Every structure is written in structure tokens, then in C-alpha cells.
Image (cartoon, rainbow, N blue to C red; front, side):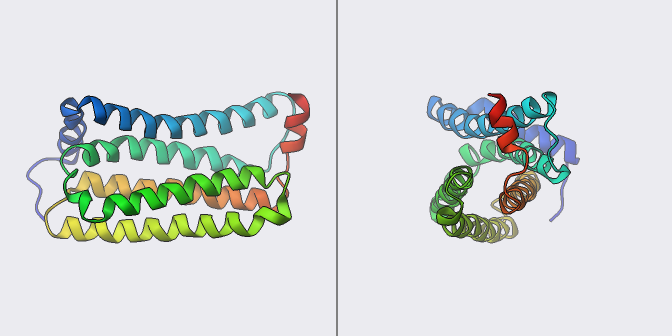
Length: 193
């Protein structure tokens, strides 16, 4: 596909679509992006609180907030297109895939948190839902590529999806490694609260 504008111009055009948001679009945008900002703030705040009080986490743990940060930045862009230019196109099944992916992602994260106290019981459900969140993300990417190649998407949406996938994988792999290692640093941080 040829592009008559620069990447920066395409990015500004894509972001500018936010001006056409309805009240309902703003509610969805703030709920979704706000939820993920809450996750970023709570995880980062927890880690920084521990670190400032002498807790030393393994370096890989910092991949969790880094992954969340990348994910949040990417969904902040992607959601603009989903609520405007591509709103109708998503009704062909992509919307459902998004909801399944989000459900699996949120529940896997909650289960990984709850697994701190219920490790043996929640290990398998957390891993299954984590795997499903990645599996449905791959399905979502395939659907986006189909829309892109058929002219019903643009390179900004495709790049935002790339970074959604990168952020998601950095976060969940980091979180899973942390869980498997027994959450080093968590008990020390909790004892400070």
C-alpha cells in the first residue's frame, strides 16, 4: 500500500479522530484506558514503594510495568480508531474477539494476583487464561491484517496493534516468570504496608 502522508502526519490524523468522539465513545475510552492506567499505577506503585523501602526485586520484575506502559500507550491510540473510523468494521466479529481477549487478559491477571496465596489451586487456571489471552490476541491480529490488506485499516492502527502485542507479552511473560519464582520481593513489600 502506498502512503501519501508521512508517518507523523498519519499519526496526527489518526489521533485527531478523537475530536469526533461521542459521549459514549468517551465513556468506553476512559473505562478501558483508565482500567489499564490503574493496573500500571498499582503495579508500579507497589514495586516502587517496596524498592524505596529496601526491597530488591529481580530485574525481570520491572518488565511487568514496562509491558503495561507499552500496552497502555498502544491502546490509547488503537481505541481512537476503534471508536471512530473502524467502528463498523469491528462488528464483523472483531469486537467479540476483543471482548474475549480482554476477559481472558483481565481474569488471568486477577488469578495471578490471587495465586500469591493460592498457588497450587490457581496455577493451572491462570496459565490457561493467560494462554487464551495470547491465543485470542493472535486471532485479533489476523483479523486486523485481513482488514489492512483489504483497505479497511491503516498503518497507524497496525503499528498500535504491534505495540499492544509487544506490551501484553512483555507484561504476561514477566508476570508468569515472577509467579513461577514464588513472587520474590512481594512478601517483603506486603510486610511494609
